[in-house]
Image (cartoon, rainbow over all chains, first blue to last red; front, side, top):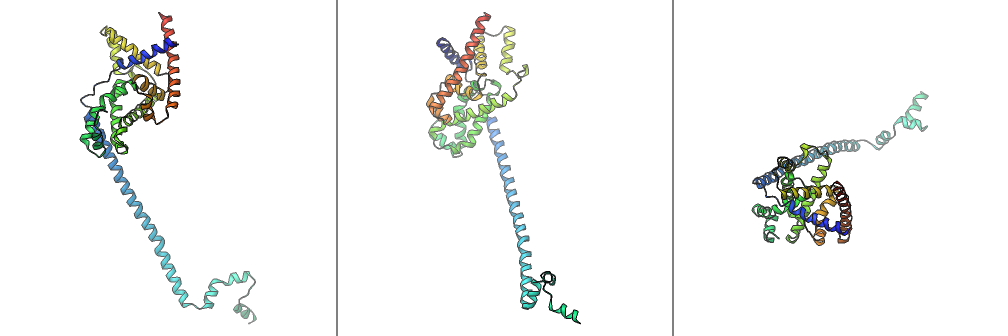
Length: 117
Length: 193
């Protein structure tokens, strides 16, 4: 076992000399810088695309917000205007339609009068 | 350190000329380490360029220039590991898949051009690579860094960010596996003789 251990140590040590440090080719640095620039331009493109996407998303969100807010306020304005003109009885009648009252067994005053007639 | 700390700091701050100097200082050493880690000479430059590419884009994350070398080794280990993992997927070993050097060696041996020393080195290379093929990519890299590159446990600790005892256990197990394979191959070659 010890002998094999020693032999393995020698073998691994001689592997280093069997595979020496290779000399870089003349193309090593130009190719490296080409790869760096290619990655840089890709990152720039991704960044630009992200900015466009974020801008578009913000614009769409703003549009939806406007659609959501503007009609609601105009509806609220309209109902507030109506409420300013109608009387308490009108408002009560609007809140309790005749059908609902009939379902509860409450007969509107006008209808019983008309039956008598 | 093969370069001044100042050079690394300049490269960290985006000085491309300083980065160029750092690459020139370390490329031969890194090429050698990768050659022994992956065992395919024709892909060594590609993997080394990937290491320096990763270095270029991660240099700003380096806390101090003192830890530059373990950092560079870490990038080398990761790029070599990624390469070996990809290679395992393409595991079919046909003649077309043999490295250029292996083909050249085979041709030269067939033509009787290969010298005795080259023949011995070729045998060492083939034997070590076949032994290392029996362990996982991680163990192959760890064992090569320790036994072939001669890195200390302290240096490995900095590269792997794992405590020394865990590394010792892992190294012992990997070495045992390689040793068993080595014993088996020794017995086999003795039987043939």
